[in-house]
Amino acid sequence: MRIALVGYGKMGKIIDEIAQKRGHEIVARLKETPTAENLNNADVAIEFSLPEAAYDNIKACLENKIPVICGTTGWLEKKEEVEKMAVDHNSAFLYGSNFSLGVNLFFALNEKVAEIMKNVDEYSCQLEEIHHIHKKDAPSGTAISIAEGIIKNNPKFNAWKLEETKGNELGIFAIREDEVPGTHSVYYKSEVDEIELKHTAFNRNGFALGAVVAAEWIKDKKGNFTMKDVLGL
Image 1 (cartoon, rainbow, N blue to C red):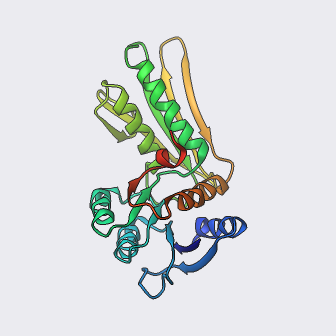
Image 2: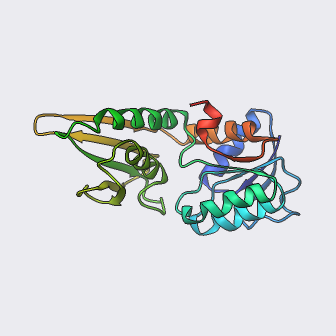
Image 3: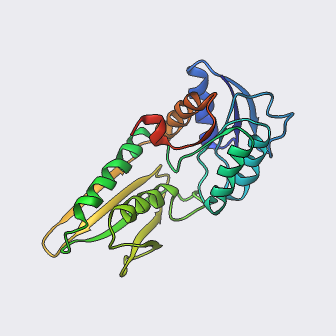
């Protein structure tokens, strides 16, 4: 495929390397807003930029009928608008808060555990995420996806909030330290014990590979998708 990389930071460079190893051509490496000219007739765009740039980047790609794989977090208040845009322009859009295969399996396990725990009043629930000090948004998009999975399957909670769980609000502790690629934990705690569900990323390669696999999958498709569609979960 002909791939445009929109946003060319650490993730963009790893995606560049993995995509080429899988036989794809990188036709654009953009740090600026995409245009019809600089997208160079790409088959698909992979967007990993900054929260303040993501919407304009995605909009420009979809207006040029280029499907978008987006891994930028922190801009989701405009996600519904983008999904409508994908349909209106007869293109495709796939957002992932995390493209790692392991994390997407973790999402499925998290929902199952939340369903099991919903009737066990002895346990409280709390989330924690740890990321490198350069991460711009908190909590992480992955942590929000985990929280949404719990809220969907456990009627005790109707919203998430930063910091400690209180009442019907599921708490997320967001920690920023060193160069941690990403660690996410869900704790179910009672007076006598604790159950922990945890995913630890060792590096960014899993995120990058998942984004390229998603790009391969979405080619020639129309509409809005998630990693569940890609992985058949």
